[in-house]
Length: 238
Image (tube, rainbow, N blue to C red; front, side, top):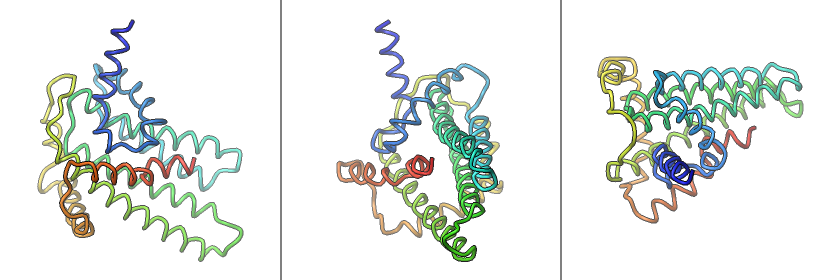
């Protein structure tokens, strides 16, 4: 029993990014559930992309219900948004357990994260606010959405640069299959073009970050920034 618990702890840590790059909300409320899903599917034919798509369906569905359902339907909206965040954690955890992480997977995951974010803010906008006019409300929602997107872009860049500065990690699971990622990510393909343009603007906006290194000040800044991360935003919304 003790050996099984020890093995599960090791596998759980293997399913995570570096500790400093994880949001506290994820570690406490979303990653544990994500690991249960990822660990159950690690030896199956289910791939991280399948989980990512389910995350999008749940998140977009939750955003739609947030905007159009009666108050009694908000419980289902909240559940779908929580499930979307759990699955958003589980896809990366499954990729690390299966040793199938790829640039293509990261790009698709990022695109779907933005799709869910747009659905959520649209739902908030359509729900309205009786205290202000529709025009003012949509202006507030639009400004909040742009602030959210810019913050997510910068946090993602800072976290990615930090993870890139770390030594290569060892993961459990089968050898990495690069054929699928190669077919998804090509220089003239859709994901390749999106990735190129996104990275261009991301780095232009993030020039002020400078060189990101693996040291205690960087880890401290990441942990503090993670308190305003996307999962934390979702937790507050829920």
